[in-house]
Image (cartoon, rainbow, N blue to C red; front, side):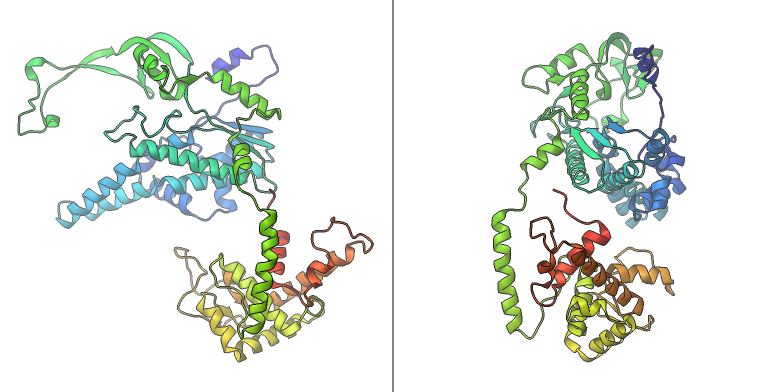
Length: 524
């Protein structure tokens, strides 16, 4: 393909480069066929570990995707890989079926555990949704790291635009589970791209999704390929025919002979990813009321227009943006009513309404409880900003020791409390952080302890109180930097936003932290 394209642009200043390999694995494995990776226990483990591990700098920089984008440093990436097909057709159903058979065989002592373990590992390596999620995480971080301006995906519906009645399926089911998995992956892929497009700092994200067959690349006559191989010819002697009424399976009967050096040859049309179609197959699939088709050139024209900023109306990401229900004026008005009623009930109650750990992640509850306790002992932002962190640490620990309700509430929702000595922990029956499945090593390193405190432990240490003092000072600095004569709508968080309630709102404080410290704001 690269050589053909080079001839197409010969004499121009366009440079055609090429790379080959599996972009869904780490760089060192990208040129090894997937079936070979699955056969080897060591590489199976690498595949599973890479797919299920936390997203971090190390896993990013090892990935083939990061390497490829970094090597070429494009302004724009046009992704024509049929990701849904690549992931769905690893056939998790067949792998699970083999596991079920082996479980029975092991119970009946007809197979040993090593066979079962190998099949379980192979099945874990073909889990489709974790593969897609990790791929999108790596894609997002790679595009951001290499400052790619625009990413455009050529997607798929999985069915050529047809519905559940699609007749083109490799199964008695119509459609097959495999085909529906392909469509499910394609749909999930679109939503993940939609979310990427709503992330501040992301590349511009677009998707063009053909809902029909795509053809054609070539018309010719010759050997017919299925995948990368030519179809070999075999012959079956009528005298050796399998018998339907035999007690033996038809798979155990019958004879055939390979016709040496002979291959299926005929007139064909090359439909790209779908391979070679015969005249009859192409006529059937493109006839009115079937998949019909679109040419690659028409898709390319739309892609070029989208890159140029011309609104074609064919960008799936923009279509989702236009069709979703967004926050409303009515809800904003009703929010004030809801908050007012909740505050009134809270003022009459003996119990503050802080966090139940239903919103998640635990960090939200951690921040809300820490902010609440600071509000209890200091009162307002100015007092927090002027406080000594060591003094705050002592007073909050005194509050935890003396107030059974707040102490029991915190540990009951799954948040441990790290006392100010940095060694003692109060806890309940459930601990939300670390998450289930996370690798644990004890005694805890200082870095791991800090990580868990950041994610979901109430942290009474002085250094955490110092962070809260710094936050209060930053908010006050923002307020003081605002022009006192400017009463326009310019500032989203003016002085009245913070001081309107006399003290400060713990919910507003946590919202500010997510936006300022974690870039977690909504952009659309």
